[in-house]
Length: 488
Image (cartoon, rainbow, N blue to C red; front, side, top):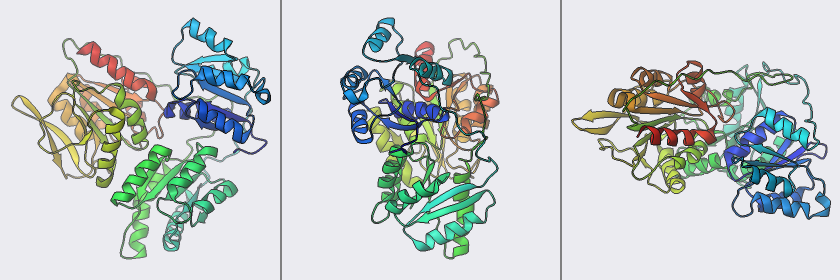
């Protein structure tokens, strides 16, 4: 629970990405946010943690929808007068009127903006609390909390991170219980969290941490084993921002070298870009005007994604894949052990088979294929067929699989009938491949900065003017669906 003096908000929405976006916006306005996936969970938080300063409520949710939740809140004497803001993707006047009659003091339509949220706060009588002005030096070292049950690992990780001028080890902990206490005591900028620990494991600690600190970056520290991969993937779904494989080496020097090469870049991707005062000034990106594509259709959708990918893919893919739809090929930056578990999870949320791409597989309608971790995925034409091709070529952008490799091959095979989607992730993988798709007459869509965990990959594509649309996560799948219907 946030401190007694914190200005608290509870964000209630069944969509995890939407909850995260709204919590981030409110966090930027000075609120300490808790999140609930439905009305029942929201009532549990209210009963446990007491009256907040604000509740935002999605109207359409399973278990207990927004209308029922507002009715229950308004029926509790301790919560009389609690400011409620209704949220919905629908804007029908009748729905808005029903929300206001049910107890909402304001209504905000999705996708929302900071300006719309601020107007809603004003409508319910809340003046957004001011944040301290430039209280954080963006050039200051990133303060890391290292949580690992191995004293040897804690020692070599701490020494290696501390040797980098952009990082500082704020403290260490040997298990999840200590980790939660140290996180509250030290207020680190980021946590490097081991998966398997005694007393309280990393996944349990993460879930407890996310109740009170939903925005604190957490990078999971996982072994490249079947169990390590499965638990790390569960952690990503539970709110971890990224993961990194535990370094191996015969000597401490070899382990330190792996930490410098693999771990440190993962941590640095979460450095604050800048500390702005007053109104936020997001980068203005001018979308690329769409070209006329008479009779081109869409033959395939290719996706490049990295940091934040498992959650984002689970949100976007189900909205446009279908048993008779065009093939969908995805490059998610992951090691080999991880991608099979990701395919299993996506199969459950899509309701359709999602597989690691086999070599020499003839693409058919309804195929949803992931590049296997550690191998490049291409498509090649063989007569009238298009087949997959896996190889162990040189990494591109320090990645294998690389989105650039898939995108270039897709442009060569399908040309103007290629639809590329570049989503959240570190680095610039996908930039050159997007250039190839655009040069062949195809189209590119990119995820926006607000909904990206890291706006590296889509940011490079957007700034290069290659994307025909730069959209929030919740709108990407809808846009793909519309383009498939319109052009096919």
